[in-house]
Structure formats: structure tokens, C-alpha cells
Image 1 (spheres, rainbow, N blue to C red):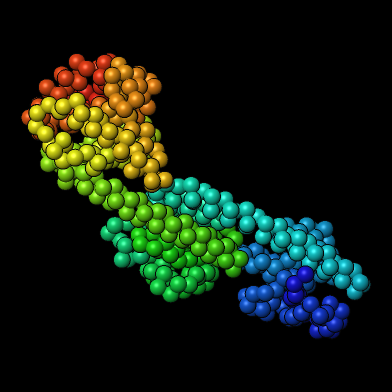
Image 2: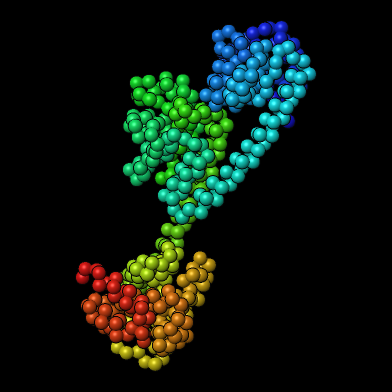
Amino acid sequence: MSARTILLVDDEPRLLETCKEALEGPSRAVLTAGDGAEALELLARGGVDLVISDLKMPRLSGMELMRRIAEQGLDADVIVLTGYGTVQNAVECLKLGAVDYLLKPFKIADLSSAVEDALRERGLRQEKGKVDQLVTMLNLQSVLSSQNDQRSMVKEFLNQVRGAFDPDGIALFFSRESLGRRRDIALGPFFRAEPQTREWFAALADRLLHQGRPKLLSAEALGRAMAGVAANPPASAMGVPVAGGGQATGAVVVLRGAGKPAYTGDDLHLLAIFASHASLCFESQRNCAMLKEINREILYSLASAVEAKDTYTRGHSERVGAYGVKLGRALSLTGREIDLLRMAGVLHDIGKIGVPDHILNKPAGLTAEEARVMRQHPGIGRTILSKVSALEGVLPIVTHHHERVNGRGYPDALAGEDIPFLARALCVVDSYEAMISNRAYHAARTPAEAARLLAEGAGSQWDAELVEVWLGVVGREPH
Ligand SMILES: [Fe+2]
């Protein structure tokens, strides 16, 4: 067990001396105080594990001392010693959290064994506390990393903080540099009742962020610092910087009113661990978003390499991607499926990079041989994209975007539901986009003409239900 510190509080100097001598040891320091007030001063410095206190003392009684320990959230156990033992006193002491109660005169051996018991119990409780903290942290980590975007991550982070610290006010103040893009979040009665409280804590958060340090504020400190600012300052507060990088950089603040125990150094330590875990999650989410953006740029540059070959299809792929998203939303597909449609839209004709320019740009009908070469583009696209493992999901869509539901398409002449669903969906929007654009082989049609052609081919070339949904989408749009 680690070294322990005991604080003896009694107004009888001889008793203090005897007990100190008996309890002191190699891994046990003993401090003494002549009354409750002196004891409180020593307790405020921190590090005391066990207080052994008389009840009847000048200035501040033992009972009052216990009340202050509870109010200030000081983490010390108390054993009561008294020469005025009544049942009422004993009950009152236990209510205030005393772990044991000895009547004077007592045997030193009894005191020693009460101290042993109290310290052992405390050790067990602290061990359990560490395990609980670990479980809480693991939970936080897994809950945060399962969020898809920064907004829901921030929301979940505040939820977890609320669950662990039972605050009357909770806030996440973003760094002043990122304001304008992000709005501070401040919840609870203290922030609602007085806007000055919110401003005061926002300024504190900014200081903490620049100093990179956590801070614990007691009722006295808050009363002093907020005098003239807020009529009703909180009784306890702590704030910790959150360095999420970019827009997630800020500080989290929690407050408690007078009805609850004050936050302790241990609470501050735990909040700091919370914040550093959250920082890591915010940071990795941000990196992930950056990677996605880089991927998106690579996809677009690949697609534009194809379009550079085919003068008529400039912008086609990007528009097909955008149409794919619209159709996906109208079909209430998942975010992942909509993402796949967008990417497949951008990339579906990437295989045309392997089709000679004179075939791609030929204004009149293709010969049988030229058509055979042209029909290779889905397969070539598949070969190119299969090199990128992150694009695995788009492969079936790109491969089968020229299949027809009547089985007369290519490359595999699949029919009906054998054609992957997203490939059938992409086929509808790809055809629609091609119809309303100028092509080497036809002039642009009006949306109404395109809609009629799609309706005619529904059930033979295209999936009838998907055509119906798509016509619903374009029918609602202004032309
Ligand atoms: Fe195509």
C-alpha cells in the first residue's frame, strides 16, 4: 500500500502526542491540529487520507469539521473520538460520513485497529474507483470513435461528461480563432440565468486553452473572482482544455451549485483524462475527414482525365454522381450506399481511358468492332479501380452500369435482380444525364423528352421502379 497521511485533531496536546507516537510508522505520516479550523487549513493543502477528530473543540467543532469536509468535496475519511458519547451524536457522525466512532477513554490498540480497518477500506475503495474510471474511459473511447462526424462526437463527449460528473452546468467553449465557424455550447441553469456567467467562463476557457492547463475553482475562489460579475456564482467549477485540432480546439467547463459536493482534485484529474481522450478522437476524426477529401480529389482528377479525352462528356461524371446522390436520398438509402452511388457516378466511365479517342468521339454509328471495344470500358474500369482497396464497394456498380433488366446489356448480360441494385440505380441516372447533354451522336434532349424515353424503356432497359422514383425526383425540380 502507498504511504498514508493521518491528521489527528484534538484540543488535548497530551492525547495528540500519545496517539501520534502510536500511529506513526515508515509508511505513515501523522499531522496534528488543535481544533477544526486548524485541521481545515491542513486539509486544504491536500494529501490527507484519514482524519481522527475529537467532537468538542474550540473555534470549529468536530461535527462542523465533517460538514465542511463534505461541502468542500475533500476526499478524507474520518474517525470520531469523543468523551461525550450519546446515541444521537453517534448517529449524527455516521450520517456525516464518519467511518468509525470511539469513546474516550479508549485503548491505543483499539484506535490502531480502527485506523487499520479504515485505511484498508479506503485502499479497496480507491482500487475500485480506478477500475471504474478505466471502464468509464473505455466507454468514452468506444462511444466517441463510433461517431461519424465531429458534431455528433462533440454531442456524445458532452453526454459522457454529464454522466460522469453530474454537473449543474456544462459548456464547451471553442477557441476564439475558430469562432464564427463554431458556436460555443453552454447548457444548464447557471449559464441560462446570467449571460455574464457564460462570458466569464468563456474568457476563463480561453485562458486555460492558451496556458494548456486544467483548473479547479472552489466556492471561495469563484466568489472572489466573480464578485460584481454574477449575482449567483456556482459553488464549484473546473475547466480543462480540449486540443482537438482545428475547429474542435477549446475547453470544457463543468459547474456545480451549493447543493452538491464540490469537485475534487481527483475529479479534475479524471476530466483531464476525458479531455485528452476526446482530443485524440477529434484529431483522428479530423485526419479521417482530410483523407476523405484527398480521396475525393484523386477520384475527381481520375474522372477528369477521362473527360479530357471525350470532349462531349465534360462534367458528365460529376453530374451523374450528383444525380446518384439525389436518387439515393429519394430511395432512403443509407449514408454508405449514397456515398457509393456518388463515387460510382464519378468513376463509372473511368475505363474509357482505355478506349481510343477516334471511337470515343465518333459522331455516327460505331462498327461492330468499334462497339466491341467501347463495351470493354466497364471491365477496364473495374481493373483500374480494383487496385484501390478503399473502392471495393464501387466495383460492382461500375462493372454493371450498362446491364439492362431484360438481359440485353453488357458486359455479362445479367437480367432483373441479378444486376446489383446500385448498378441498376446508377444506370437510370447515367442514361438520363446522357440524354439531356450534347453527345457526339445526338443533340441534347429536353428533360421532358428524356423522361418520356426513360418511361418507355422502364421494365426492358431500366428497372421500372427505379425509373418511377427518378421521374418523381426530376418532376419536382424546376426546369
Ligand atoms: Fe458507361
